[in-house]
Length: 312
View 1 (cartoon, rainbow, N blue to C red):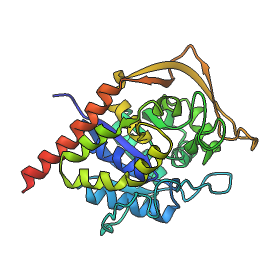
View 2 (view 1 turned 90 degrees about the vertical axis):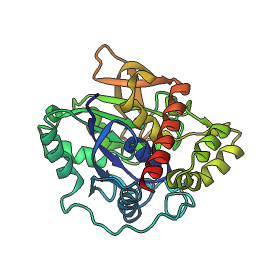
View 3 (view 1 turned 180 degrees about the vertical axis):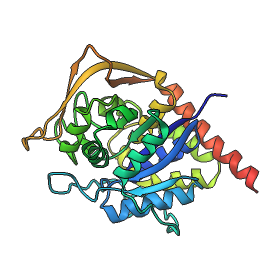
View 4 (view 1 turned 90 degrees about the horizontal axis):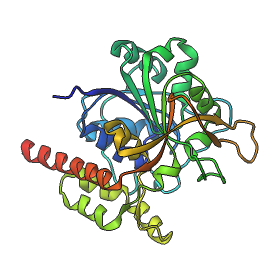
């Protein structure tokens, strides 16, 4: 039996994130914890959502709260498309538990030490928590196996002509992460925008009945409305692509690259400048096998359907 991959999911729980967390929880990943950061919504909502998602999914894992805003700039919140609570029209039950007393950066470091260099970070939001850990703990480079992130772009952005939201929300932290020496796999808009799950296939996901599939249908209520208006033939779940890249990196075409982050407050603030590289420390996703990706999402829904049947 294949050994599970130990991961921490660093997340700003909005609509993409909840689907990505559900996907991770259904797979061969050992989720050591959720590390929560402000991003899609302000901290009070992302923190509450992180706890609520963990409890709703029945995850036996820890939750740590991190940065309430970016490192060097005014906060930039991305609530567009996510609804008032950040999870579409899904009325997730309020959490009853509590987070760890230690902040995310300490939790990340402690788990990295426990995993002895095998820990993978799945980064789904602004990179503030990771940058704080790198600054505080000089040994982070030797302790983290890889950071697999949804963020950036090798071509065009969604918050400016070239900047993607997660990098734009805290470009200084992103620069620290890319310059840290830790191996990075970047799943930017250039590949996630190619990952739209057709509406009819989303319907197939919803029809694999469980409380998870019902939740997902509510989560993407506003997404579907938006993508249809934009004449996009499906729903793009950006953060799920990063989780898929950890579960099965062979699903993607990768380019060796050097990535620099623009932090000068210009019109290109938050842009990821991607250059062809000779070393494979930074790999940029360039294409995705959509058949395998959609099948992975179908497998997720079957997992929760069977889990529900067993528990009845």
